[in-house]
Image (tube, rainbow, N blue to C red; front, top):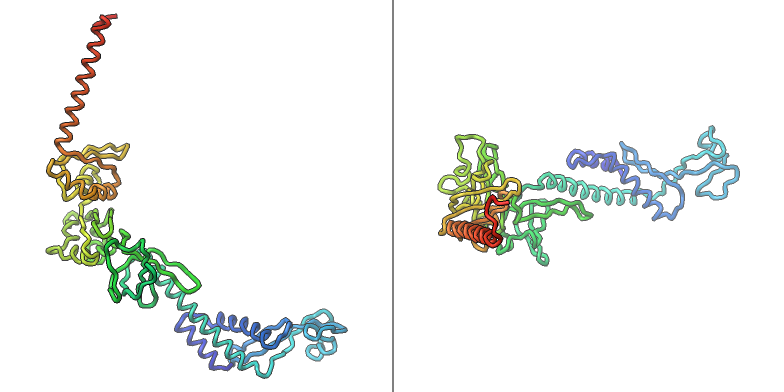
Length: 375
């Protein structure tokens, strides 16, 4: 090895952020193994690399003794005192045992260690970069398919879109460009493993933050999201500025902002709802596009009965109950939807039951011969 290697390590420290001393210590540790492997020695050896010249020296640690029995691990007191007069029996001394051809082995070993450490450093840099992007979105290109997984090229590394995180009905083709939500970043022996999603509600939230400056700036806040990927999403928004309409800000002029998000989600419908801290008002809005006549809430049980016009009942419930289901997820309330005619029928039935019970009680009193107030 040479001073050129030391210069190269200096450059690596500046460019890759890998500390020079850590690299040198790693090379020294690797050279000990290389020495024992190539020269079959059981000696207790040390490697010393000159930090300026890059010169490599091998030292064997030997014990000073009167009668050495093993030349590899022991040295006579006479020999030891030629090196250092102060040495005495039982002391340890380092003897240089650098082989003539060790320079070539050292250079190869150093190269291997440096390359390995560069790879590790690059992996760590990528891991740190994407670990800080957890719960955020990135743009990638569909690279290939492995079994049912979609592998997405993120530039510096690849991400995995597993079947459970793929939107039902979406087709992914080679070279497709799409935005994905980073769910988790793991460290593995092969480098960082990045798991992404197209189904996570966070994807919708981040898309709105990108498209709507008022959300990005914090004027409009996303309070809640409920989503059935590939089909429909409900999003509740609130404005901190009374002069800013939160729904209008999200929709954009002529619907351009929300349409960009719908296009990215490949046609998924989006209902934008104004959030309210009044449960009745919020629940009523959550069932949009259906119109609500009345909302009766039970605060303790977190349940609500919603009355809608007869012709709005199917719209309020939605196809296969989707609208009601999404509204319940969005608000956190259990919602029971009734039409006006169903409510009237229920009231009439209650009255009928009451009258029947009253008549039965009155009949029983007549049979027993008692009247009200009689003891």
